[in-house]
Image 1 (cartoon, helix red, strand yellow):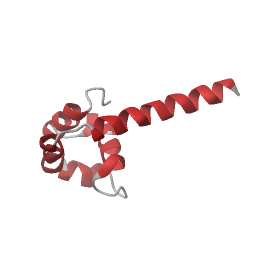
Image 2 (cartoon, rainbow, N blue to C red; image 1 turned 60 degrees about the vertical axis):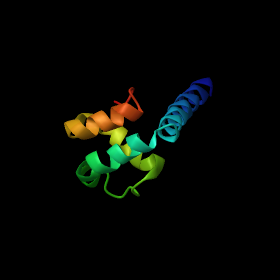
Image 3 (cartoon, rainbow, N blue to C red; image 1 turned 45 degrees about the horizontal axis):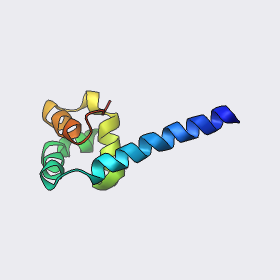
Image 4 (spheres, rainbow, N blue to C red; image 1 turned 135 degrees about the horizontal axis):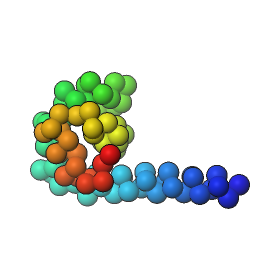
Length: 82
């Protein structure tokens, strides 16, 4: 039970950190994500609604497969993106 609770807390902590990163993104960073990641989003995030936290989480999760300009935009918002 303790292990399950630890896993849940770890996952929720990661989610909260992702939410905080996106929420703190500047308008310039959000614009860069929209312009630099459009084709990457289409290729890697099918079924995810564009814009918002789930879209950013999808890009962040796939950061190693993204174009260099999209990787830079994602990492500008969340340097820990993996």
